[in-house]
Image 1 (cartoon, rainbow, N blue to C red):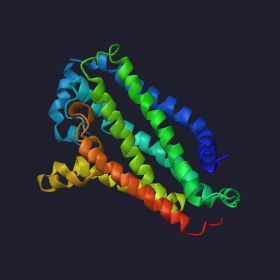
Image 2 (image 1 turned 180 degrees about the vertical axis):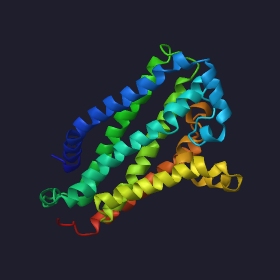
Image 3 (image 1 turned 45 degrees about the vertical axis):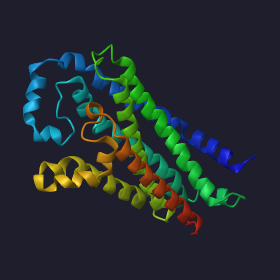
Image 4 (image 1 turned 90 degrees about the horizontal axis):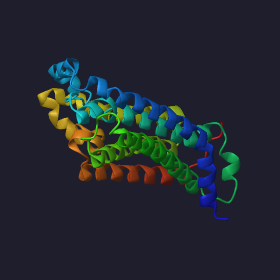
Length: 266
């Protein structure tokens, strides 16, 4: 039996329960958010939000009174990418640096299997888990559009926004993957990933509130993946491809690094 498929099946099995619970939690929260739209549509309270200007812009919610703007502000500009990033980061850092720190890799790596194969199988399993949760969340919004008066939002826009959220989450977890591959502990790997993605968010939404810092947005991976309003504006393929290139570089670097170093003993 080939080692790579066997490793992948084992890792997917290990992530099955957490994937189910993350799916239930994120889909439930998404359902609550979209279900509120009919009661808020056309209300004076929603129109009053538009006067808050800069504050809403800091959360990607410049047009809460429209269906697409509401979905941006409530789900796709912050909530969904943050939750997906947290899920992917927790699973991947735990299965790499976490297992290494706990001494769970020693027996596995004593077998005739390359370290890079073990590391890559865990990255792929984490990405499959991420794709399942992201698809469930985005699919819920697509399916329930007629129920909650969101028909005017295009399916393509929703799928593009969901894909952007998933790619951003993959980028976040891949930072931890690369750091873990270089030998960082789970805490340090996760901390680095969180620091990078928070900085990226600040560059995308908060820094541009100052005209002098507006140029910073163009250097933000968060902005590359989602733009200013992912549902309203639609996905931009060029910048999204840039994030995919970064992911490939991080995964390649982390895989190469773990192959060339000693595994830590607890």
